Length: 325
Image (cartoon, rainbow, N blue to C red; front, side, top):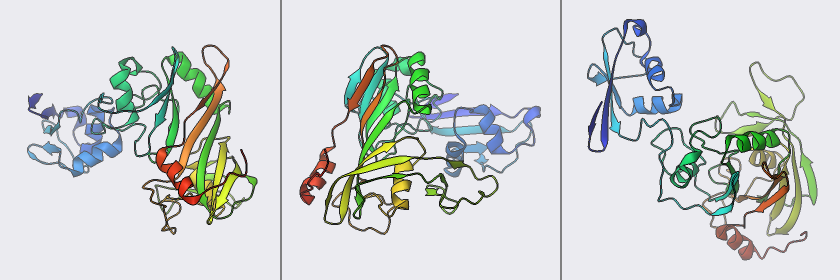
């Protein structure tokens, strides 16, 4: 390994046992902590060469070939790089857990050392002992996640015992998760959305609601999902909803609300037809409250994250009057 300034050169010699395998397969064996997506991105960006020539993921390597990586020193890190420049409000801390108020625009974690502005990077800068807590090296202590553009409460376990306890509570619906969302249309005063969800075959970024009871296509996984809502206010063609999730499926709230024709304001993925965003550069969805049993004291703990200023400004602009408190 040779380090030159901010770049790293690392080489591997292909053994006889690896002769004939695809380059991408060879690299996954050498760098098992990196995701397939990250390795393929590096190959597209010409970070790997074989005997000095640009390597492609489908290339076959032969015994004695020299595979070399040239790129940023942090890229091959086996875990998140601590970033002390990041600022995230800490709403609660004790010996067992942290509660953070994640801002919109920040991912909870990344997939390689190239991702350095995530919640995980913030956590390891302040609490390096979180490294190794949990089940994934890229998610130190993170008990659950929020979408990039969703703000609000994120729980972080400070010990493996606390992590296991909190994950068990999430799996068995022992954690009450309450969100606020501004949606298009005049919503009912209250309701429940129970459509199962599956990955959208036409857009891998999205989930879609399953309206039919017909058998799912082969190899198509379907998740049960349950969302309760009540209306807090209504003004100018939009409704402010309070949402409770009884399950935790990816994009559950966004997909469920779009399925009942009330997509979230500012959600370009699930509400692309709505051009008005009220000046937001994010969707109006905020994880405002968590209630659960503390893993140490076993007492009920209720945590709240205030509505961010940019969301509160939209409500003020709409002169939103709350009909329910």
